[in-house]
Length: 456
Image 1 (cartoon, rainbow, N blue to C red):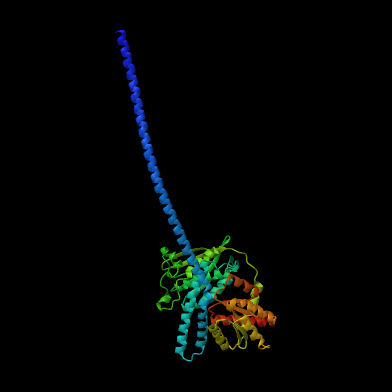
Image 2: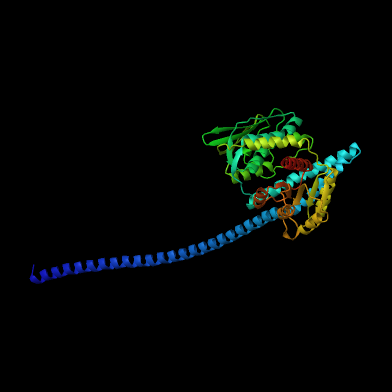
């Protein structure tokens, strides 16, 4: 091979190498450009999707804000409703209070059996309306947070005896047996709310029991006390356990439904649920169709408080009551509602009481000063008077004027926590409207007996 051919061969090899490098470089540049274009495309997609997502999140945020505002508006409306019902309870129950007092007076002056029967029917209807309104208003107060527990040591024996006294006549009329077992146990709770909780369950047990009866008992396990209310009633399906605690839901047809006289309004257990939540009581239910149900309430155990002197005093007071008559008792009645005042006047005069009537502090002082020799033995005062006056304040003024603590009763449709504290401090009895004549007479007789005992 000549030198020229050798050089030519080298040049061709160099040329092929250079061409391969150029082609490789062009391939790499092509790939890089393709990647560049892909990156630009992906970035555009990411930007577009990010914009769509941001728009969706903004819409969702606006929707959530609207839902929050709507929820707050609904809660505020519900709160306003419950607050209104709780505040309006006095005005709502005032005419019913007058009607019940008048019907009690009217029924005692009937000369025919038919007149008496009609009066009893009207009175029963008014009492049913009273029960419904009381439950609705109490539920409203619970929902509005106006009912707060008064925590103290509660004797279950005293509580059970009181419930047995109320329900034994009902059980006897229905040919049922109500058994109550005394245990000597005490718990830490609110006595009024706990009593109402248990009595609502007992009333429900008797209402839906056709034969047999109900048992109220309690037992201690460690630092807990378990109160049980068992019955031999119709029972409840397990899938309906939650339903029975809903307003106006009834667990079946009780024996009272057969004659149309049932007072079951479907509110008793709804109130029970609210009260056990307020009192932090664990409530459980076991039931079997055709065999009965058992409600169990779990509360903290509390050591007993010595109450023998109080029991002895109460026994002496009970002995005195039997010989006490209301006839001739001087009673000062303070009430701003004319219909309620007239109804109370007619009832008390029928019992033979001597009355002075007033509707304000000024009229009260005038009634007392009109005849210096007249001093009331008892005072009955409405709590909510005109011009923001309060019955408790008028009672305090009368006591200061006369110079001694005259037994007094405040009647109200709205027994607030503040009223209970003031009544406890002033040793004033509290009765809720509508006032039941039999309960009023029993309380007045008790106060008269206690006053006579202290004076002796």
